[in-house]
Length: 180
Image (cartoon, rainbow, N blue to C red; front, top):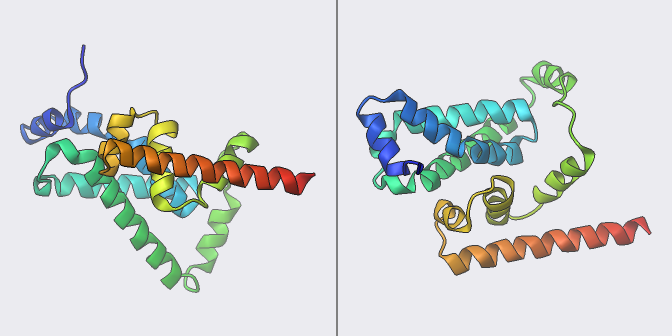
């Protein structure tokens, strides 16, 4: 049984099938959450932003010109929403000190420290490289799907992915040298 394409799912959404949008959500939510986590560094905030991204995408679905590019489109909405979140956060720093302290008191669920450390290193990479790593390795998308989501040619995607791997390798080597 083959998975329905994004185009088929979007046509089903327009036909009134709510389950079709749930399938789109399941397909792209891990990637959108990863993008949001890169911005917020907090799992709860990232999940809230991701929900907002999918609500916005649903409300504006009729504006999507090419249903086969839903992944790239929703990633663009996520990037925009994260930019808005950063602006709101910088404007409201002084106003919401109590709320920020309450959020800090509720840490993210425990995680393997090596994975957490690698995620921290990934956040230092340029956005395009982070997205390539997220789509290909962390979300397990095929190279073809990952390049379509990013809007790159096959060779362009592999160049970005290669740069990201090399930067991560350099960071790891530098860290090892500092430990010695």
